[in-house]
Every structure is written in C-alpha cells, then in structure tokens.
Length: 65
Image (tube, rainbow, N blue to C red; front, side, top):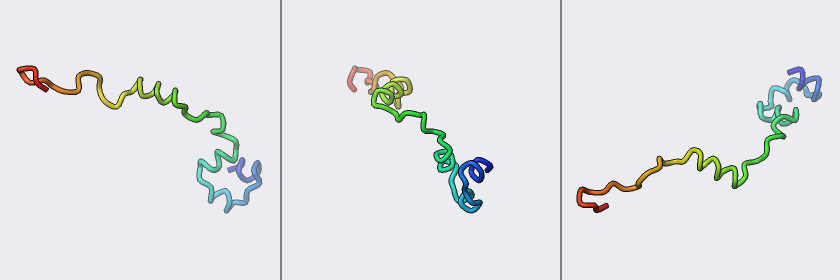
C-alpha cells in the first residue's frame, strides 16, 4: 500500500481499484520474465506429454488392431 500511495502517488481509491497484476506491472515487477518461445513450448511438451508413451492401440489375440 505504501508503494502505491507514496511511491506511485496514487490516491486511495485508485490504489484499491487496481488488481494485483496491475499494481505489480506499475511497480515494474514481472517485466523480467521472457515470453514462452516455440522451443520452450516444445521442451515443455517433451518433458510432460499429454498422453503416456507407448502403443496407441491394443491388439486382439490374433494381432488385429
């Protein structure tokens, strides 16, 4: 609250109208995190796949899918 009222010079009603994300942005927080790149997304998908690894179909006793 001190950072918003004293540091940013906000009026009380302006401070209380902000969301936590808006206040953090105004205070310069969160600007250091880079957006997710295509390579980063591929690394996440490889590390935590949506489906378990293994065969996609079960075969019948005679080998048919």
